[in-house]
Amino acid sequence: MAYRMSFKWLKHYMPRSLYGRAALILVLPVVTLQLVISIGIVQRHFEKVTEQMTRSVSLDLQYVQDAVNASPDLTDLMAVEERVATPLGLTLTVPASGMPTSGERRWFDLTGGVVERTLHETMSELGPVVLPNTSRVELWFDSAHGPMLIEFQRWRVSASNPHQLLVWLIVLGALMTLIAYFYLRNQLRPIKRLAAASTEYGRGHVVPYHPAGANEVRAAGHAFLDMRNRIERQTHTRTMMLSGVSHDLRTPLTRLRLGLGMMDEDEAAPLVRDVDDMQGLLDAFLDFARGDAEGEAEMVDPIALAATILADGERMGQAVTAGVMEGGGEVALRPLAIRRALENLIGNALRYASNARLTVSMTPKALVFCVEDDGPGIPAEQREDAVRPFTRLDPARNQDRGTGVGLGLAIVEDIARAHGGLLRLGESADMGGLKAEIVLAR
Image 1: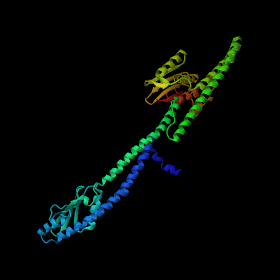
Image 2: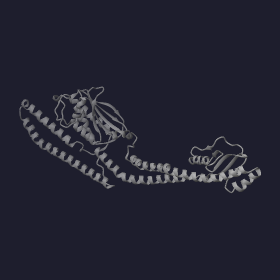
Image 3: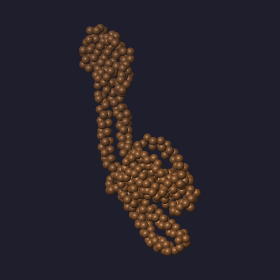
Image 4: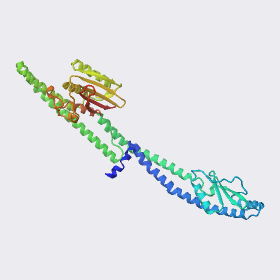
């Protein structure tokens, strides 16, 4: 547990997408390998080569220095330059003016430090070492004839173009990484297609999907198709079973209603109410069985749909008003299912409250239908139980105000999940009662 907790902070810096993590898996080893090779091998190799080349040149420099110090006059110095320095590829200036007080080297000249250190170790009377660029070396000495300047080409003490190896490493590493990324992207594409098909099915849309890719991805794809088919068969079987039961029970209920119509009105009234309650229970079972299976998704204007529901509620004498309607545009919905969900929420609100309000909010990422009431509401600790099928909350709702089997909110949640959303219960800030929101992702 301690080992897992110690790396938990890394999750905040890791890429969230599969492509990002795959790219990190590809790039990180390549970059690490290049750094190790560049620092641990290439750098040490060039340092050794530079040191050996500098020691070889120092022998020539020492010979020239001894010849200058042994020369009695300027005429002999000119002969030393012609017979010794020039054949060795050295430019000799004695006496020289403008001797600097300290050496000079660019900060990024890594091998220059090795050259300077090696020369000071192998030569006596060596003064400042000036490395103005990558093509020339200037050495200052204190000789018997005054300041002495010796110049020669930089390639004699360090390898020319040492950056070429690093360039090849970087270019080839980037090229291989790019090729591996395209190959990996082809391998990850079936996983993205599987994820997209799963997401769309969670929103109630059945999109064509064919397993592809590696064997493991194909196995996951076939498992998803089997699961989707089983769910479809189960949903269809449930709908057909409850529809059959509802249809079969309607016939005896109709006969009972006809029989009660021949009885005395005062005696038959309680029995008629019982028959109506049974009819309502059958309708609730059928609505729950149908759930999200009714209708196909189509482009719908949510605000126009809400206006139609409010108009129907007004004709029925329901005390439901329109709240704030924000946003605009069309969204892919199953209008009959959404209509049933909102009507259930409104009917549920007016069963336990005197007023209800319907609002719609549309943002670029979400669509929210909200139904609020001024009733007793549902305690926070019982809201999870309220959406369970066949659950009725006595403390939160007065069961004498209406009949039911506890399927109203369960039907709404089932429809919300079929659209890839959720049902969220809370407390209305201004009305004081229950606040039920259907939140759908766009």
